[in-house]
Amino acid sequence: AQSVTQLDSHVSVSEGTPVLLRCNYSSSYSPSLFWYVQHPNKGLQLLLKYTSAATLVKGINGFEAEFKKSETSFHLTKPSAHMSDAAEYFCVVSVNTGFQKLVFGTGTRLLVSP
Amino acid sequence: EAGVTQFPSHSVIEKGQTVTLRCDPISGHDNLYWYRRVMGKEIKFLLHFVKESKQDESGMPNNRFLAERTGGTYSTLKVQPAELEDSGVYFCASSLLMLEGTEAFFGQGTRLTVV
Image (cartoon, rainbow over all chains, first blue to last red; front, side, top):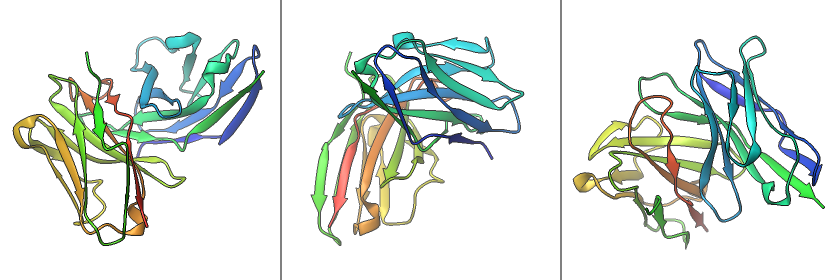
């Protein structure tokens, strides 16, 4: 069965420093992977997605993620954190049932300090 | 264009009562999904509608939960009777296509508290 593991429940960074949110996936085939973000009192917003095209995926707000099959990883990065990046981030895999069914990680809360 | 909207945003009910959550998907999206996040756990799939039909309801926890989508537009999720363990955030999402890899657009969620 497909699953994702987010290795950190909380990550704290200073504004202007790089962000790394880690995600490992488990899948018997080449999966579709997503990163979603939830800001306080907002809905889940898609940051980026990987669907077997380019392994380096660029998303909104300067985020990107690299699909590494050998490491079964899909880590989310951003070169320079902004205060507005403080939110909860979810790594998500799509289950191969022929239609859209998402399996979420437990989430990583990103804290950004001035 | 309006996104996915959910009503109410918060609901506090007593154990044993009934609650109905509503979701209005993006206009034209035939696919509608319900997910929920129970306290401190991951967000989990509940079910998937294609128009008014249930494509997959494998995530529904038990028969106290009833989802409907009459007419293939908005959907309701009724919990009857509510139990303490039903507390959590219920998310609705919609997508244009049902294929794996399609972007799903999520609403803000309904925070349900059962006391």
